Length: 308
Image 1 (cartoon, rainbow, N blue to C red):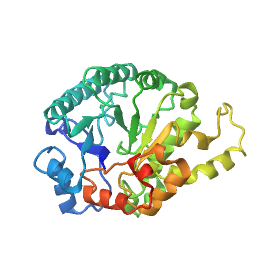
Image 2: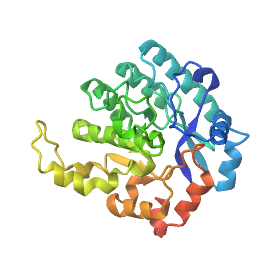
Image 3: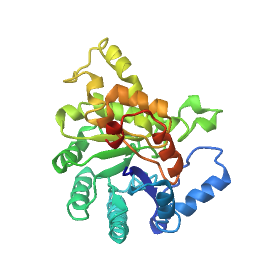
Image 4: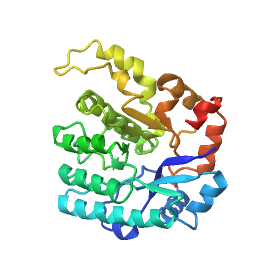
């Protein structure tokens, strides 16, 4: 079986120095941080050997958090995105059988982001783009991003929505429990909420051919589908959706297994949204390729669904 992993991070030291610091959450063990720091900029010493040992055929690479979403200067974001995408294109060209690319986009300037997406797809051969959540509290359901959604729709490539932007709000629920901040819990809630804004904001009604991917078992939205529908029926929105909320999850909104390697969770997601809506991912180097493959292979899925 061929394993293609879609949420696999890399860093560029020359670019990282220009990026604001984004905490991965409190209380991180020093050895884990040191290991990630060593592995992120590498492609051959650690990454390819782990892929080989775990049986990963291809990684789709994307710039690690915060990408270019943390800055406020549009001109700097445009330059940084182009630099990152050209850098990634060179890496992919050196290992064309093992790597593919998701573009970094300067969402500070939606028109420039659309242009960069087209360049990355048509000229660099990238397979879509990855954006790190919101932009200083601005979300992708806002009308100013419609031009960017049109570009995704026209190019027939997906947008992978990933956590990692600096927090837009202060959540009191995190006070005194810093371990809840970041990848353990709050990022899933924040990014899942962003995905729901895209759904309820009518983005997929305006752009029915657009595709949004959420990692980490869809930030657990597949398991909320029935409740989303039942609670939506009790509301009277100013701009009603053309379909029930659940209809978008599994069609326009797809998910990956990154970081959630539970066979039970995957089986539940398949039963809820179907195998066609789910893709394999690891979340390297923050997660283990071996654990990702082992979790997948422990499922009771049919051979047909496994290959999907």
